Amino acid sequence: GENVEQHPSTLSVQEGDSAVIKCTYSDSASNYFPWYKQELGKGPQLIIDIRSNVGEKKDQRIAVTLNKTAKHFSLHITETQPEDSAVYFCATHSGYALNFGKGTSLLVTP
Amino acid sequence: GAGVSQSPSNKVTEKGKDVELRCDPISGHTALYWYRQRLGQGLEFLIYFQGNSAPDKSGLPSDRFSAERTGESVSTLTIQRTQQEDSAVYLCASSHGGNTEAFFGQGTRLTVV
Image (cartoon, rainbow over all chains, first blue to last red; front, side):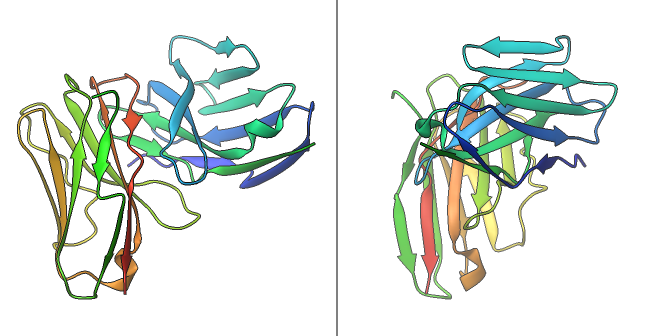
């Protein structure tokens, strides 16, 4: 089955700095790559996604890049704010269920 | 409803008892997923329903776990003879299927004492 590796497991940045989270996957059939944000006590919420026919996608301060050849994709958050503090999960989809990475706990300090 | 609804939000049960967790997906969503999230951990896939197809049960950890879904509506996850290691948040998600956004509920926090 699919194996999704996510790094780092924790990340601390100062407000205004950028944050980058990276994921690698094993199944070359994976064709959909969402990123979820989970705040304490809540379910994960989609923040951005990318499909395999696109190399990069941006939505305001958030961007995702995909390298299908190398089987890795990354989340970039610019101008971080304290409310960006949460756990972020990458995921892949290769037919049915979403396969999640183990998560990155992001802390943005004022 | 406006989103995926799960009940109860919290459940404390004694070891050995059976529990039933409920998920109401977004209306019209053909796909429904159950995941388990242990404290501070990632999302562990349990089971997937897609329309009238046979569910993918490959993630269920033991035969004490089972799930049902009636058509494209409510799903129930049942855990029989609960054990302490079953303590976790159980998350349900629904989507239109395929490569579409999955919407998660708030989860049910299960504590086995």
